[in-house]
Image (cartoon, rainbow, N blue to C red; front, side, top):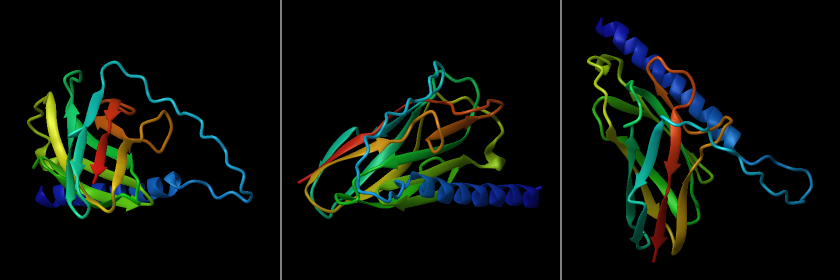
Length: 193
């Protein structure tokens, strides 16, 4: 039984890392032959009434150059009826002002196998361990993990969630549910002095 659980966990990690690499590549802006700037079209976010609400906390923080900024990924799951299986958090930030340092799970029921940052984009995943699936307690709020950034130079940097109706996007998966279960996401503002 332990071998089966280990194999399943390894498969989840390999899949998660592979998808992260795909998502990071697809988040890069397309290379155009001419230098004409095009206006970005707004992308609608999924419309759910009973989904998960994701917050980066604190919502606003002030720091100085060379200090670390630690944000908590907080989930409000009061509207859902089944346990969270996995979540992909996609964020964009200003790489001139902030450098991604780490992403760590705060809950022993979840692992954090994927932490990929490139060109001001971050993809990090949290997956519930197969051995931790039972009993399936429904949790209403969860501090899932922490994200750490280093302040590089003075300015105001927004850490914005990527949540839209098409891939790549932040996504959450619940047991016995299909599709993205994130209703809304809130980012954070970092003021570097």
